[in-house]
Amino acid sequence: MMNSYLIREMAPNERPRERLQHHGASALGDAELIAILLRTGVRGQSAVQLAQELLRQHPLEQLVSAPVEQLAQIKGIGGAKAIQLKAAFELAKRLNRPRDRVVVNSPATAAGIVRDELRDLDRERFCVLLLNTKNGLIRVADVSEGSLNASIVEPREVFKDAIAASAASMILVHNHPSGDPTPSSEDISITKRLVKAGELLNIVVLDHVIVGHRAPGREQDYVSLKELGLM
Image (cartoon, rainbow, N blue to C red; front, side):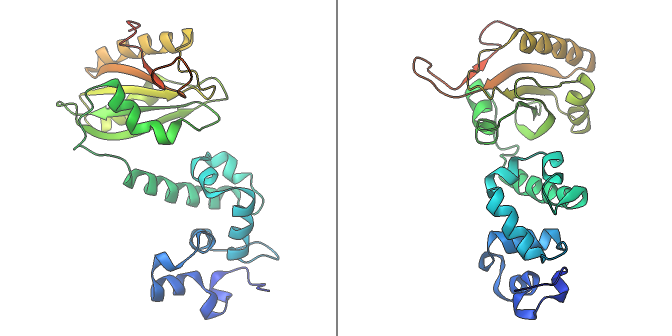
C-alpha cells in the first residue's frame, strides 16, 4: 500500500507524471490524471489514492459539473485543489465548445450548443452566447449558478464578458432543473431588464432560451422567449 503524500515520493513506476511522459496521457486512468492535478495527497492517502476515493464517491461526470464550492467540501480536497480541478475541467469543456464557425441563427441552434452541459444539472445555471456582427459564436460565458429553482443574475455580470469580447449581440440561456422549460415570471422580468441594459451598452439581446427536458406532448426540450412574444 502506498503511504506517500506527494507524487514525487512514490516509486518511479507508480508516478502518474512519469507514466504520462513515457506512455502518453491515454495510458493513464481517470484517477491518475486527477492525481496529477491534485499533486499531493492527505495523511494516510497518496494523491492517487485520494483521486480513487474521490471517483468512488463522485463519478467523473458529477465532478466536471460541480461548482468549486461543492468540490472544496469534499474530504481531502479543500479550496486550492478544488480550484485546480475546476480550472482543468473548464479548459476541457471550452475545447469542446463550438467557436466562431457556428452561426447561431435560431433558438434550436442556441439550445443545441448548451444542451449537454445544462440539461442534467440539479440547479439553475445562467450563461450567455456571445455573438459577433454576423451572429457567429465567439464563446459561451457562464454568468451565475443559482439554487434548485432560481438563478442569481446581475446585469454587470451578464455584460462583463460581452464587453471584453467586443460582442455585438448575445443570447441568454439557462436551464430549468425541473425539466419544464416554461418561463417563470422572474425569467420574463430578468429578460426585459437585460434587454434594456443591452440597449444602453449597444449590445443586442436577441433571445432568451430556456432548456429543460422533452416530455409527452412537448415538441422540444427548450423554449424561446422571443418566439413566445415575451421580449
